[in-house]
Image (cartoon, rainbow, N blue to C red; front, side):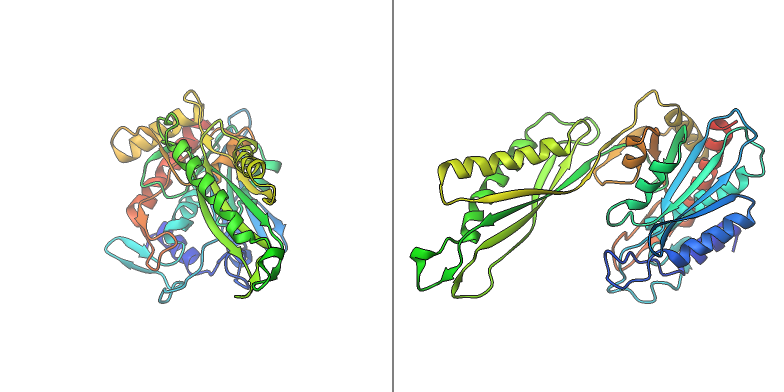
Length: 377
């Protein structure tokens, strides 16, 4: 087993399930301690910074000699749960694939970042190479938001699994909630009650119309149209009572240039139309998480550097593309750090069988190091 494979094996063997997804889960403390020790042994300056109690980020810095650009390599260490998996923290290698929870999403990328930074520390580059192994990407992205508040870099690579594609754009999202308000009454006294669940019907109809309208908007060249969907609905307490409230959770996927304010305004417009037509209709709209889209400028220096390095590592031309899912890259980009994504091959993110292609992890490590050598020289 080579050093990179051994490192990935060790990372996957550590339970780091996000406790915001699975209450009582282990969290990131143990894996953070392992990563911090490994990076120190490799000669990096290491900081362990709690974002929430017992849930830290690890920042490793291969200090440059001065005068060069700085490169940030980012990956999250939390994972989703393990329901349906057999021995999720006992990594195994079969046919060039390493299996286990988090192998693909995204400890393969983290291992590649660590190995690349360790090698960069030996090269006396002029610029810093910064590894950020972050908590909480799988729920709210708090780890990278904390990094973006404290650290600056001239460019960044997020090592999410991208199937060895160079990703420069992805959608953002806004989480919204509508609560319709009724009047509780016994089912035998309908003249006293207002059914909050029935009132939600108009909201759902309006949401469906909005979804159709969004699908007809001009397409983003890499991402297609924006979208919206109903996520969960809750209301009522018992068979013989008019429900006094009903709550609908909604996710709006946004394109570059769209904002949380605009997404909320779309929903407020639906509610306002319903209230104008029905004096018994009462509802409130609340906004929860807002996470920005990503669109890396075509002239960003980090884009050309990674395109060249990835192309050399793969032996073919790599063209920038987009993905529909959200990543921490958007948080770095929003903080003024030009960011791209490039990560390994595999399958099974959030699934009962998860694996990463080991050869592709090695390719990523080579591409990250080559980028550092060119970008930070």
